[in-house]
Image (cartoon, rainbow, N blue to C red; front, side, top):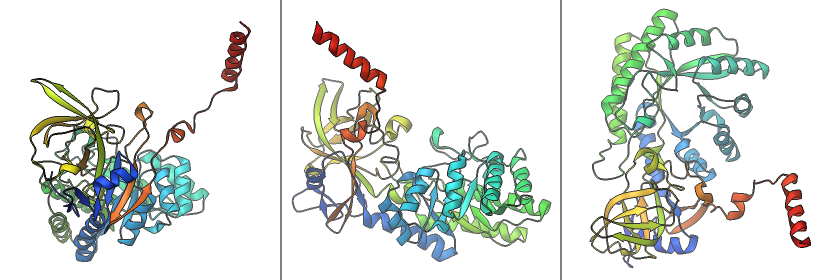
Length: 449
């Protein structure tokens, strides 16, 4: 397993993260356990801030859908980044964390009236408007509140990045955005400019996730700038902001070669500047929305090994006490991960195994075919790069409680997310009175007999 951030081997020969012995973390907080490396999380924020904001004056807005808690909001605020939110729940989290609302970009392809009203009341900095229906609704609700909504329009540039089919978003056939090619985007711009309660500041696009090829971003920036020039020629409107979304890939396992953030910044800013010069227009303020590339490498999940099943000549299954409930990505996207035995980190990998989750589902496999030291029940397994879209997509399938999360830093381990209990799982269950009465009747009949 490749080490990330503050990962280290301590004197006891165990995996250490943030100065904390991961075996001791497992004993203290239980497993499965999400471990977030604060130093690496902050360093990733700073890489973006230095590469985009300090160097080019561009904005960096953290895509909260990758991982959001109250503590994450605090760290993002302290590092000078904005927040990209996609739901009322995410917005409520940011409000409760005291996050500056002028640094919030509110996304979503089907915002409800209640979510829009909450966003207007909270004073979000930008609405990222996805479609004409939302544009009309936002104009109406802004007038109702006697406010002017500051917006950018999300467009579909017609670019297919090389990534998993389910996380492509820039192609024409997508549920997101207004299509440039068929005239939807231009029509939406004209409509927005005519509205009394709408202020159109710029344009947005997003071409997908877990992208390694910078050429995809360069092409996207070029298409968007050409469109901006065309809009100006037809309407006289100048886009002051150009949000190019996020999606930069990270290392998960062998073969992944993500570019450096500075390289990413230099490439797209060069294209933007060249296109602005050729069109004779001012360079818009560029905004990017990283999520996975900030929190992904900073996360590790700890599990305890349980049952081991050997099928001679075929496969050895090693079952852990978590799985698709805390990490559905392998089942959804065939995502690949690396792992180690935290308590045997210095031992040679000699056994080929496949790591199975505990859900009652054949597809609940975390890792196929990985070499580890001789595995035994009770070993602590650490799966790396689980900071993005693991907790965010976790669920209670089979009524399994979701894990706790700890933030580690210089030997300190602080609980930032409590482990769910069985009581939490049934806490919203309700039994109609007619079922209670029927149960009593049955008991009375049984006792009378």
